[in-house]
Image 1 (spheres, helix red, strand yellow):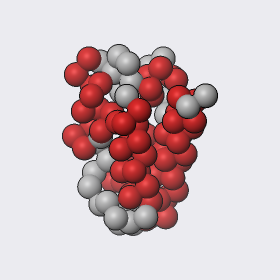
Image 2 (cartoon, one colour):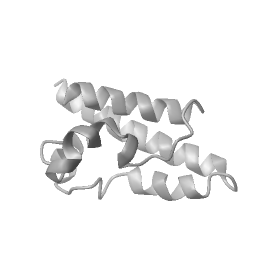
Image 3 (cartoon, helix red, strand yellow):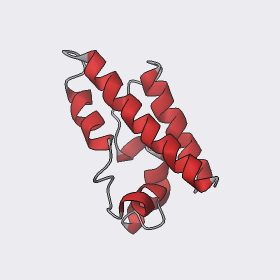
Length: 96
């Protein structure tokens, strides 16, 4: 779980840094690769929120902003940064 979380953090860091322009979806999420098929059971995101599919996280704002990234790239980066911070907080929780 921790390895997938670290890879997800790196993915979102790359998005914020402009190194990753792929759609931020379950198709390329290291956490989803491990947990999505089991309805997110065991995923640190679900453990934090109690909800599957990243509901009640900054992810959905980032997903929506991605669709408007060409007209408002700053909104997308800001939303991606919020998702990045959220994921980093999960790592901090795991390391306690």
